[in-house]
Picture 1: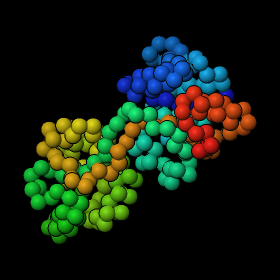
Picture 2: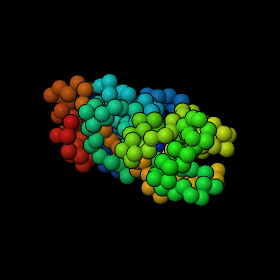
Picture 3: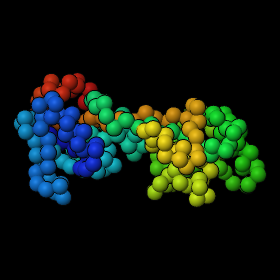
Picture 4: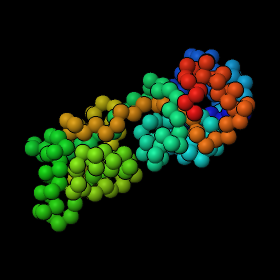
Length: 234
């Protein structure tokens, strides 16, 4: 039995159901909207597991589900060496959002990462501590800034509305997910010209550590033909 994890609520769940349904695999809840049991029609040997999008990378890495749909941003941020733990089977073409770096619009001389690096160094000299960047995506942002040579900063965790942290004086800049940039602009923030950290979308992944016995491999090959991915990637 192949276990497939998909988001348990919201627009992402509906789009998952639509994407699979268009390819002849019907997914749905087994009962009411408050239940997390799933049902599958049109694909023998496939079990649906409804999870939060944030749980799916962990369940894939642990091998407790064979397949999972979640944002590529979550996989890359939650899993170190993510491509050794999961195989990317297919981008699904929905759930698009960009992880970007944004600074106060009033910083008229800060438009690029080089500008941010210079501003961060000046900030530390003036205030005696590093410039704070609020984010929920610590691994992705740290790796991005390190690769671009930005050094004088500290990441602070944001559990609420990240775009409000600058106004609330708990950070000087943010790294956040956005689809249109409107919320950032409404909070008087601007995206750096070269501040795109990651272009995310919903993606189908396979767990490399799951139990891939002969039956599971056969089921995966059948799904690959139905859904249009290469099962040999696992």
